[in-house]
Length: 340
Figure 1 (tube, rainbow, N blue to C red):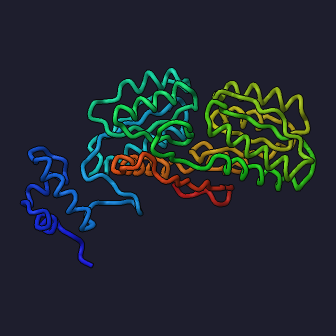
Figure 2: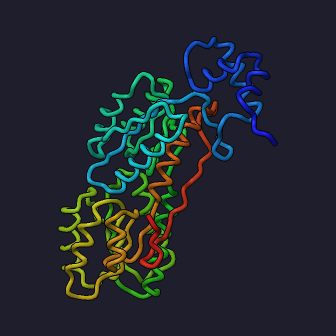
Figure 3: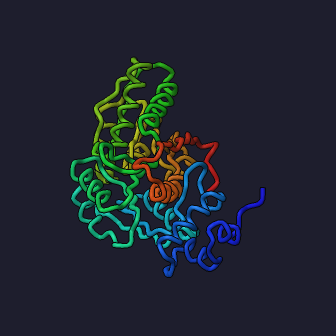
C-alpha cells in the first residue's frame, strides 16, 4: 500500500499543502480548527509516526531529563544516548539534560524547578521518596508528562517506567551465583549502592529470594550500603574479605563497584565469584582481565532510546499511563562481550 503524502493529507483535510507542512512541523500561522483537521487526516491516513503500536506526537516536543550523573559511567553513557538519539528525531524540538547533584530527593526537587515553560515531557532518575513522588505529582498537575528511568517511583502519576524489571535482574544474578557454587557452602557478600533506589532494593530482594529458596547451603551475609562510592566500597570490601575467609561470591548492585573489585584483586588467595551490573568501559576491562565473572546489563543505549520514545508516546497519548514494557536484562560473560 502506498504511503500517504502531504498532498493526500491536504486533500482529505481540505487545506493547502503549506498548511499541512506548518502543522506537521509545529510552526505558527494555522488556526486551531485547521490544525485539528490536519491532525485527524494525518492519523486517518496512517501518516503520523509510531513506535510499534505507540503513537507519537504530531508536533515537535521540548523534552528535559534530570540525571544524577556524578562519576557513574553508566549514567554518562545513558545521557549521551539520550542526547544523540533525540538530536536525530524531527519530533524533538529540544532536549535538555540536567545534572542532578546526588541522590537526595532534595537535589531532585531543586533541579526540577528549572523546567522550562515550553517543556512537554520530563524524564528522570530518582529515589522513591515522598518528596520525589510529590515532585512528580506537581509536574503532572502542571500539564507535563513524566517518565521514570532505571529505577521506578511507584505510587506517583508518572506516565511510564523505562528499564529492566529489577527484581528479575536480582533473581537472575542469584541463580547464576547459586549455580556457580554448585549447591555447595560458603558465604555470599552483597554490596548495595543505596536502598533509596527502588531498583536496588528490588534487586536485593530478588537475589535474596533465589538464594534462600534454591541454595540454602550458602550463607547470605547482611547487605552493605556503599552510597555508590568506590572509596567507601573498597574499605568495606577489604574489611569483610579480611574477616571472612569463606566468602565464595560477591554481588554488587549499582555503582561503586570499582572499590570492591580493587579489594578482590588484592587478595592473596583464590578470589570469590563476582557479579556486577551495567556494561561500561570499566566492566568490559574487568571481564576481559577476569577480575569479575558476570555483568547483568540493563543496556544503556536501549534505555536511552526508549526513554525518549516513551516520553514522546506519553505526550501523544490521551491515557495517563502507557502499557508497562520492560527492557530485558543481558547476561554477559568474558566470551560474549558485545561490540560497542
